[in-house]
Length: 461
Image 1: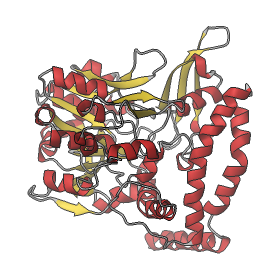
Image 2: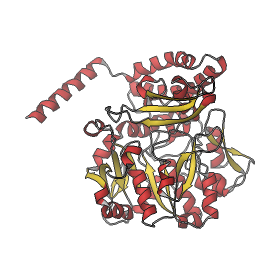
Image 3: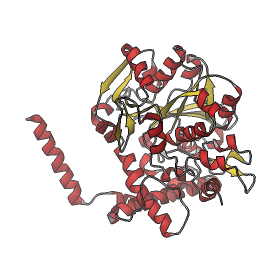
């Protein structure tokens, strides 16, 4: 069995949609769990398909790709969590409403717009509201800033690249692409194999990623807010609630009520059952076998500044990792339009510490569990290990169960006709056991409290 078949049959496909570009025996389709997955039309595949799959190619990994791209850049440094980097910042876009329209600091859309306005690219490949029935969001191509602005904000929704890659093949233009780590990696691998794609995609704007969600995430949020799955039209996943911290955001669901009349509902995410990111509800299982949080193969990466000194600003703030000197030139050239505060790489890593721990320490244990079962799994940069405290093992085991059961619970909520209360009831005992494992012992919590108090006393003096 070739590597791409092992990825598909083992449940490691992230649905990026790159493999059909090089192999007509593969196609991308959404499955019954609301996830895009590659499907096999034949048992034999072109070798190139395994070369461009982000979970199949074990030799051309994030380290190899980023070293080839940035290893010889003047002034470049390397960090275990960030990969290669030239400069690291915390900041936001200060003009033209980019920050207000964005999920956090608005810098991704600002950069994309500047690449367009300055003629560095002809178009931007990014995620926007879809015109396809039953699909809220999809990758599309924008040629103007007005078109680009339609795609502002994060979309916690399944997307795939196959159709926009066909557009790239057929249209001789210069592109910038916005994507999560595994999608950027897949594109870099494709560009390694296909010179035409490499020539046309000039810039890669990466997004810090927790994990990719199935359609069930959006539908469950709207359902619990009062709009049934069949009547949901759109969900704004990062609705900024005035006067609240950046982390205390809401969702805005738009659709139809039971009488068919238009309805719009805003709910704080803390009032909903499926929005705790740590539980991993409706997560692609492939995400449990990824070790790249900060899009290490992208020219620049942006994410949320999840740190106490920034999160209180409800307008939103980005962390930024610059790798390509041309992106740094863009920031320097338009420095009056952005607020950029240089920070050490450690600050960026700290802002994503939970995700990094899950993708490194947790991944070691998940690989170990696969090896114990003698099951094929992707080769990663971390090595399989059982050398973890028992409590942490239970946490990681519990997270796998939460992912798997969230899909079962959602299907049960649909099939039973009982709605989201049935989902909550199904998940409650599993969640209770997980919380027991994830709650530190009383003595450890007491020690943390003492340390916090000591730090406060030291800062005062």
